Amino acid sequence: MSFDNRARRVGATAYVASTPVSIDMPRKNLYRSIILNVEGACTITTAGAPVLKTGGLGSALKQISRVELVANGRDTLKSLSADAIGMKNMFLFGTKPVLVETGITAATHAFGGVIKLPLVMPRSIREIDTLLNTGLLSTLELRVTYGAVDAMFATPPTTYTIDSCNVEIHIDESIRLDGKTEPYSAYKELYIEKDIVAATTEFQILLPVGNRYRAFLIEAESDACMVNTIINRVTVKSGTDVFYSKMFDVIQGQNAIDYGLEAQTFVGYAYVDFCPEGRLVDSLDASRLSSLEMTLDVANPGAIDKVRIYPCEIVPPMPT
Image 1 (cartoon, rainbow, N blue to C red):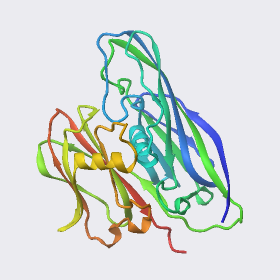
Image 2 (image 1 turned 135 degrees about the vertical axis):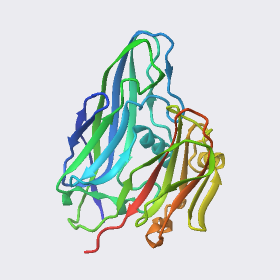
Image 3 (image 1 turned 90 degrees about the vertical axis):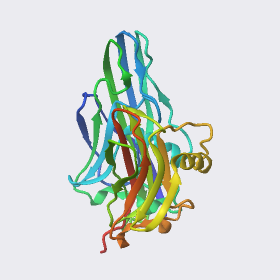
Image 4 (image 1 turned 60 degrees about the vertical axis):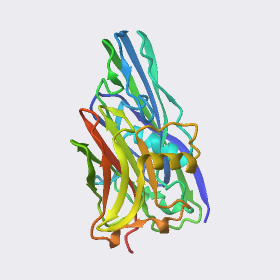
């Protein structure tokens, strides 16, 4: 099979603090990816002693608290923070997104960057097996939820405004030249968030069963900053059957080697991949399990500590 590959701008969403803003996406061709260009400006009138949020990718994408892709008005295919998308770009493509953090002096500062939301599964042998056929959908909505005015700051400036935070949306799409259609698997990315209220070696996060898991992105946050001081060990198991168990710092060290990230930092994040050779047949098949859980050995260093899990699911096509 062969494809005519195209790229185009769809539109943009404008900043409204703590509010979701939606845009209807075109429905005809096969989607490979959605490119999000975040362009913002912050004016600091009186600086005081501001401190930007740290860890992960820093503060550049914090004004985008969530990006969702919803099909047919009810089927959520993607639901991630802009930070999580950027971090997955690092792990899956081996490079840090080009980002600009706001300055913290009394002036007007730009912030933002470009991130990529894949619809085909990167680092797989046949990425086209997960193309999104938008021609079969009745609706397709991209929803951008903006964060609060202070989203970029651990300690905000004395007086400041977020002047703008526009998200420009582009799509990479394909047209199959032989005109044929075939069922594609869906590459689904949602998230699970849990608060940590005490240190424990058995912090349990139940995972849905039914689909296959390619990978998990793990995110640890303490007092609104990403940190390495919460998670000690990660275990994925079903009953007594253990599929994965490693120390958090060992996972991060292996991530740096596997994805060519030795020159990058990714404090607060780790990526667990069940398909290191890109063979999706090797993914963790949860459809045959009665239960699945991630068990974490965690500390409780801050006042508000959170763990987020971003499962990378493969949803097989419905039988025809």
